[in-house]
Amino acid sequence: MLSSGEGLIRNFLYGKQLTEKLFPGYTPDTYVVPDSFGYNGNLPQIMKGCGIEYFITSKLSWNDTNHFPFEKFIWRGIDGSSVKAYMIPGTYNGEITPGFVMSMWDKITNKDVQSAQILTIGEGDGGGGTTRDDIEVMRRIKDIQGCPKASWSKVSDSLRKVFSEMEDVPVYDGELYLELHRGTYTSQARTKQGYRKINTALHNAEYLIAASWAEGKISDSEAEKLNDEVRSLWKQTVVYQFHDILPGSSVHQVYEETEAFFSAALKRLDEIIRSLAGEGDETLNLSPFMQEGIAPYSSGKTKTDSVKWGQVSLSPDGRIESLVYKGREVVSDSFNRLMIGEDVPCSWDAWDIEKDTVDNLRPALARNGKLGKASSINQRAVIHRDKARIDFVTDIDWHEDHQLLKASFDTNIRSQNAVFDIPFGFVSRSTGNNNSIEEAQFEVPAQKFVALSDENVTVAVLSDSKYGYSAKNGTLTVSLLKSAKAPDATADMGKHSFTYSVFVTDEGIGEVIREAEALNNPCIVNTGKVTPLITVSDGLSLETVKLSERGGDIIFRVREYLGVPRKGTYSFADCLDMSTLTECMMTEEKDTNVTFTFRPFEVKTYRIRRK
Image (cartoon, rainbow, N blue to C red):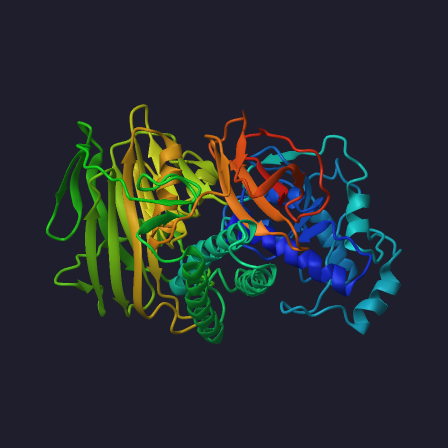
């Protein structure tokens, strides 16, 4: 849920490279991820794009409110891609005893669509495998009366057996939201911020390396050296997006290491970006969307005009009491109301946020910079003159124990659904509490924004580093800090600097996507002249441009970002050879004929050579 789309692709790319090296001739076909805290709705497309056919988890059986309805099912993602999915009921630390095997078979909900099940056997949560006792007990019970027949099998072979019967297999469409561990969207804010920023920096550095090489500005050896360095940083970043690191549920030493890495890596990437962008009086936009009058992946002179979009009234404590956009008041009570409250989860401190914590938050009453019992806050509201965006540039010195801090935005928009940003797309979630499924989604994950819309206007909350949001009954919230005491007693203590924003538009969700990207990847000032290597048509975004893993080519990804089927067109700089354009897998294998027709939210990966 927290990993970026490109980060997930690199997870498969580098994982498959290492597997190929360690196990020659073996081709992986299964994504086994038992202990992750929910699975985003675009993961099936990413799996399919990386050559993965099967998905296995067990975590969905941990739901705290609703029973997940399937063990064997087809999982369909937001673009329509599907994978065969299997949910092991209960624990991934399975036992080999007749009682356990029988109890696990009894848990299977839909025995009419499956006659076999998969159990994973292991002693301990840290990677422990089977023991001699397990092997001996298995020999004795493999064909015991009154118990399902059991045998050892490779994961892929087991899945082929389970899915050999495909009649009436249920389909689950969309994200797999885990009704538990909602605190992992917020815990360890500095690591989450470092992860977000390094994704942006890696994106920018890879583009400039590829473009500089294609245009002959750097030699083959220079490009190879820089690319190897950036690839090494990507591989380390992939490690740090792993459970329990990015979720914020590891021990203290882990975050000492991750924060030191992100700090050093960001400094080095900035040096690479600056050296390749050059010095001058240009402003460079390395995002997929127009910014400040500058086209994507281009430099130019900033063009921002003052426009009469409305007016804002601020209270002495920094809340927005009124925001009138083109004559329409969008504030119900107030925007940017800071809320704080006791956060003592029932079981797992860093992992969870309970519903009663969210329900019982109270105004933080920040006066003279004081926040909570022992913390301080300094916040500037930056009102943009060329668009209805207000940035809350925030510095907090946080020293609270078991407290949750949120910012709340009470809109007057009446909408049954809100839109949440996810990797390479967005999903809609209910704003009501009509049933137990909706009630369980009181805190949900998103990447860069959440938005509410009616017929005339959209109000969105954007963030440069936060992942925990809610959208209930017209109110949007973003979780800012959480102060768990276990497994890291110092979690989130100390100074934090981050920005979140409220943005209002009458141009729909596309404008929100573009503005969220501008907040996360702002233009770089004082650069040399840069022209785009690749340009794509409206409704598509150029997400990634990089040198290929096996040399000599440029890889680029294009996505349909509005959820609408469309046909795209591309144009290329003179240094690229259009006749060599091919389409390939996300992991850069199996070149095929080029297609330009996109499904909603589809991501395509292409290969092209320079002249």
